Image 1 (tube, rainbow, N blue to C red):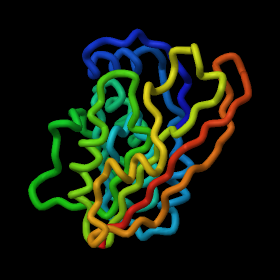
Image 2 (cartoon, one colour; image 1 turned 120 degrees about the horizontal axis):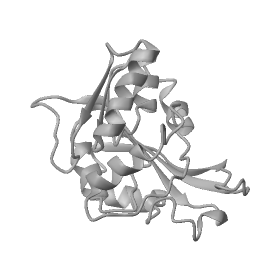
Image 3 (cartoon, rainbow, N blue to C red; image 1 turned 180 degrees about the vertical axis):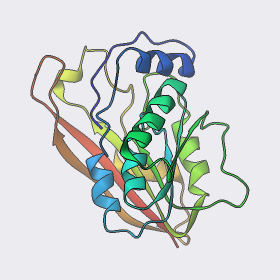
Length: 218
């Protein structure tokens, strides 16, 4: 999902920031699946999925349209309402569920495990306990299931001075270290970067370098 780079003045409250961010435009993301996530998931058999920081629902709806029972958890109620409308428009609302809640406190029902847990660009210019969220939710991956983490690793040159984008970037090595995975319980299937072209707010050419982590629970 490509960011349309709307500027919003940061606040001390992440929920207020993201509600304002989403309210600043009719849509913030493209509504399409993140390409790197789609490439990883396409060959997999559908099952249960959980998307962390699901935004306006593009990834969850894509999963649901391919047979997954997918749940998205997103802090902003504004974004969640749009995600539900997207699912209805796509006719996948029976397989796509959206929850407006805080990932630092929300947890799946007792005993629930997922065949796929994804976090696509779970990055923020305001407070976000990202590392602990990713570590905590790795416990909810079912045996044989996967966790897929996409992150902006290196920004395009035009990003400097725009006030857009996250405040912190993550390499594959940094994200793997933050997960603190037991090597006897996990298999690292992928930890690398991909590049994609991304124009700036005024059409400036540039390239995002994105980290892609895929780990499988043994």
